[in-house]
Image (cartoon, rainbow, N blue to C red; front, side, top):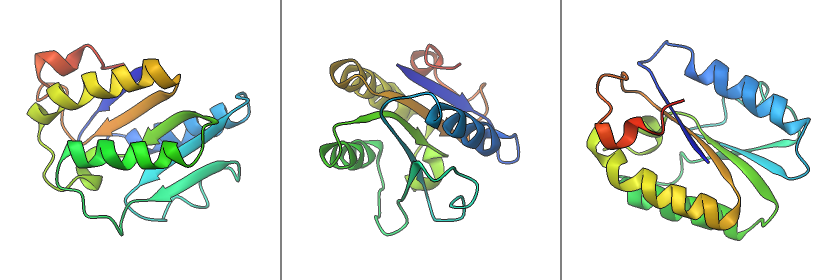
Amino acid sequence: MIRLTAGVKGSGKTKEFIERANKAAGKTDGHIVYIDRGNERMYDLTHSVRLVSADSFTMTSCGEFLGFIYGVLSQDSDIKEIYADSLTNIVSAAAPGDLDDFLPKLEKFSLERGVDFYIGVGFSEEEITLGAKKFLG
């Protein structure tokens, strides 16, 4: 499953993601991963949520981020949920149109591996293209 959350800076996406990840950590039998640009959320997340800082990796496309996700999943086959807080901060050149190619690939991978993805983007819902709108939720 892919759930896309869109909203401009200050709209509450990060707070929602942290709450959702912490709640899921208490209910799942697998592992939860929270990908962010840095380590600032370390104390907001429960100890069982694995924080992965992407700040030492330069990613300029959603394809590179997909490869990053593959790498994270290759190290732990028990991951059940991945939260990517603000894809637009992690991938420096992300644009709304990039989601049309990225999200279907991520969805296919999600179905194959049984991993749910929660992706936040710093675009308004109006900026999201029609192909990506089906993932809004």
